[in-house]
Image 1 (cartoon, one colour):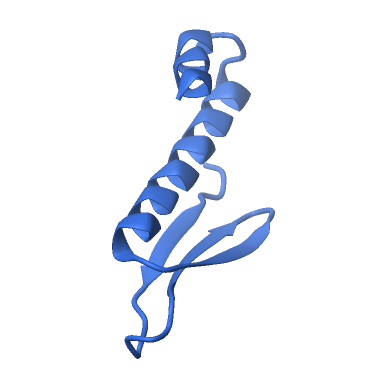
Image 2 (cartoon, helix red, strand yellow; image 1 turned 90 degrees about the vertical axis):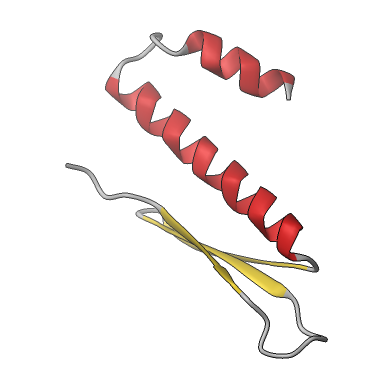
Length: 74
């Protein structure tokens, strides 16, 4: 099996600090600071969805075109 991408939300240690959404993938590490827990959850969900589509495309080209069209409309 190929390497998987993992995303984690880190809660701020102090109220004045941001939440961090960290994504670790074979391509590298990404860290994004956001101001609210809801924003962090939305960002983490979007990141995961993008990775799933990329994996699906590499396994079966053209089989998931309707899913891509739905995501592009969002």
